[in-house]
Structure formats: C-alpha cells, structure tokens
Length: 285
Image (cartoon, rainbow, N blue to C red; front, side):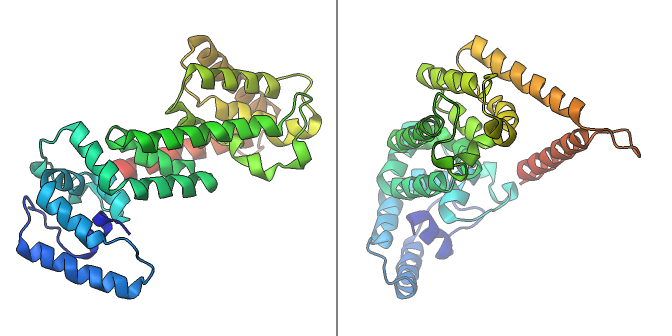
C-alpha cells in the first residue's frame, strides 16, 4: 500500500482533475478504513500521508497523477497513454517531485527494487527507469549497488579456471539474457567497464571448459553486447563479439530444406517481429 494506490482506490481521479476539495479528503478517510479492514497488517497511516500531500504538496501529487509511468507504478495499474492528458501538465520542478517521492513514496520503490532484483526481473525495473530522473537518489543508489553485486556474484561463481563453483548454474542463469546488461548500462562507470571487460575475457577464452561453453558462452557473449560501455574500445569489442558469435551460430545451423532458412535465422526474425510488436503496443498506450 502507498498513497497513490490509496488515491486510486478512493476513486478521486477524474480526467480534468486540477485541484482537490473536502470531498476528496472524505473519500480518502472512508477508503482507508476499508483498506484497514481488508489488510489488518497495515501499520502506516497512509490516509494521513495522502491528506498531507493534498494540503501541502498538491502540485507534486497532481504531477504524479498525470505521469503515466509513475502513476501506473505506484497505483499498480496499467492504464494506457490515453488516460493521461497533456492538458493537465503542471509546471513542477524536478527537485520538488524527487523530494516528494523521497518523503512519501520511496519505501514502495525500495521494496520493489529488492523484490525484482531477488527475482532477476530486470525488465520490470527497466520500465520504471523510464522515469529515472524523478526517482530519489537514495533509491537509485540502492539499485546501483544491487545490480553491481549481481555482477560481482557472477564473477565469484566463475573462477579463473573457468569452472562454475559448486555447479551453481541456476543462480547465475540470468547472465545469458540481455535485460541484465541493459539494466547494468543505467549505472555504467569505469569500474563496471573494468568488471565487464574481465568477465568478457573469461567467457571468450579459448581455454573455456566445455560445460561452460555449451551452457553459457555463446548466449552470454550475445547478451553482453547490450551493455553500453563508457570505454568506446570496450563497446566496440562487445558489439563485434556479439556479431561474430551470432554469425557463427547461424552458419553452423543446418538449412531447412523447405525454406532454405536456418533455424537461427527464423528465430532471429521471430524475435525482431515480436520486439517490434511489443514496442508498438507499449508506445501506443
């Protein structure tokens, strides 16, 4: 529960909402009583917090109500773009919005970060980061630390002899996929570049153990190409390695007799089409 979720459940929203009134406060009080009845473990008085926001920070609250990414995140909804009218845009400073979120909503963000990082659900976090500029620095620091710890965790599991410690494959399976590296790019630094460079050297080594090569190597190299390094040379290396491995995988795949296309080519086309459809649907909301 958070104040925006309470706001949503109280039914205060309207398409032309530009200010709040006494009736809105009464709706909040009634709805919070219902919430307490249904969720008896609620410790914080979110009604008081939301009423405080209405009385002291109405513009900041209205800004979030009219921001699709922030409102959907806090309200736990998936409203389309049509719900959010540009006519209701408010002139609120970036710092004021960040301070408002830090004061009344940071707990929700931090809980979300902890849960999604534990589940390796990096794409969910990436979507929230569309509104990164409005998020409190403390929350971003927590996320930066956790994503860096993930990279360190992988490095610790893969020793210099290129064996997986304790055969703990499942715990580092996420490094085979691009969302981790895309999220890592949000917090890129010279330090992260150095860690990625070392990891790339390990995974690209000709001395790589067969069990690692069969389970991880090619997929990791392709996925790692999504990391946007600060170092241009490293960036070029990652992208070049990705293209080289992808081409080798396509060449090794036998051609289909009926279409003349390899399995990897078909999969590649499918993924591109699926990605385009996904982006079109999301952008149209």
